[in-house]
Image (cartoon, rainbow, N blue to C red; front, side, top):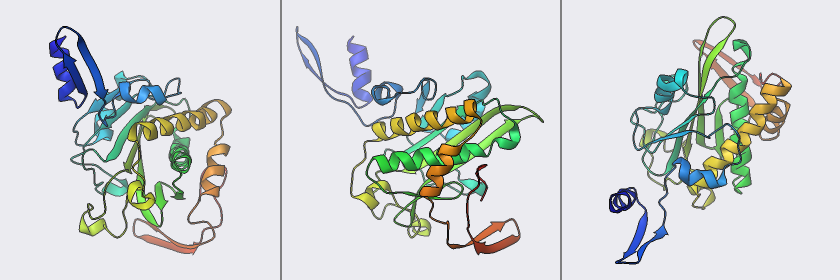
Length: 269
């Protein structure tokens, strides 16, 4: 028992002990293990297996490494990423202890051509959760969440598939949760922020990550069993930061300019 208590103390649990009487749990640390998020989790599959790491190069990389031998809904979480990635190979700033860096292994029985819809489902779940925490957020199609015109969250979806079959989809999410002002690198300081900076609230990461997984499973099940993402699209449209605005779309060497009119039922701008 003494060895177990010491290992818990090393993990950040504050435990008092009295000789010949026993131990008392005083407080629990702000960590994202399954044991800490489970009390807030309402899901059936998503997040029911959590692999927690203090440090990884990338949660997406680890998820891809484990995907074939892991059940759907497995979530990889790391306190720190040394090589966090965004879309188009961009770096994702991932300091320890203040963010949420997670990747979920999905194995939907759908045509690979429909895999991109997962990003819209995730964006809707994230936006819904942030709003539930009293933080008004907006979706910058297709994969960024914005608060007060600053990016606080990004989504990176990667797929392994054959011609007519998805082997797995890795849904990577990076959220700037409790970073303080001035903590971001200079090159992104004007465009990136955190939920705490923009709302003035210190956010409970355990409750937030559980809320996101809860909302995601509801919207994901609609996709799996009803073969549509109408609820996700409704959330994405109601909380869009680009609809009705002049925008620029960069596709490789091609640049398109125009007005963002709508997001269709398939999640396409």
